[in-house]
Image (cartoon, rainbow, N blue to C red; front, side, top):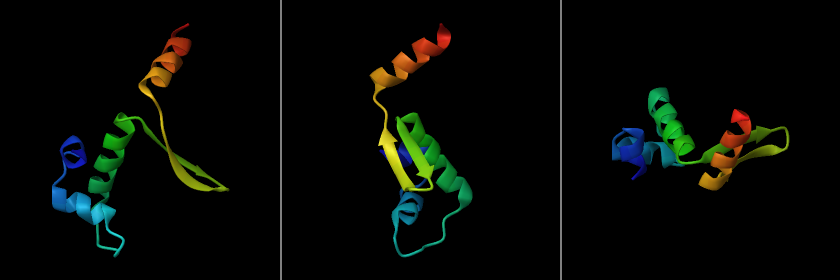
Length: 69
């Protein structure tokens, strides 16, 4: 569960996911982002918009191997 991986309470995670603008501590938001990134989620931000990309474990290993060479 994401709340467990991010080391945050489930109620805090629900606040992050809420569209009603509930206040969320910045540290909570940061912990959730770190947990998602550790799971292979890449956050994208450009002048054309924002989005996410899920990087497969195989792609991570290939990139890692190229850097070692």
